[in-house]
Structure formats: C-alpha cells, structure tokens
Image (cartoon, rainbow, N blue to C red):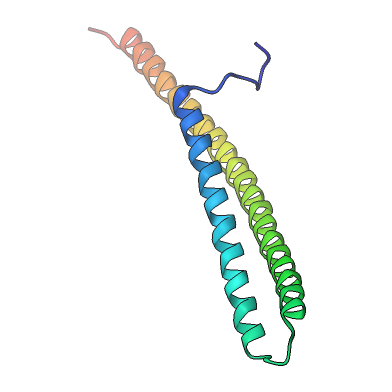
Length: 124
C-alpha cells in the first residue's frame, strides 16, 4: 500500500455517498430555484413569445448556475486555506507544547539529581 493512499472503509464510503447525494440534491435545488426565478422574470414580460421565454429561461438558469458554481468553488478554496492555516497552527502549537514538556521533564530530572546529590553529601 502506498503512503497517502488507502481503500476507503465502509464508513468512509457511506460518508462519500452521503456527500455526493447531498451535492446532487443541492445542485438540483439551485437549478429549480433558478428556473422559478426565470419563470417569474418571464412572467413580468408578457410580450415575450414562448420561444423567447424559453431562451431567456435557459440563459438565466445557465448564468445563475455559473454564479452559484463560482461561489461554491470560492467557498471550497477558502475552506482549504483555513484548513491549511489550522493544521499549520496546530503543528506549531504541538511542537511548542512538546518543547515545554521536554524542558519541564529536564527540570524535574535536574531537581531529582540535585536532591540525590544533596542526600549523598549530607551527613546522616
């Protein structure tokens, strides 16, 4: 098995399927909303022919979905940036905590060694 690549577990597969289903439903919700908005827009223009209304609806839905796609891609990019910032900060804090624990352990060992040496030196 190569590093970084693994077979998804059953739980991960369910999660991926749930994410994919959620994305599918979200995309259809946005498309349906865009079609409703286009129908309302065409309803305010009674002079349009059926073909013109269909053409306008198609253009509106495509533009609206493009805007939605761009917004979602921007959100995904920002989420990735935040994840990287978080991971970087977490690693930095973890290293700092490790250094502090190591320094504390060294201090405790030095104190124990000092007390042991003092016990050896002092008369009974």
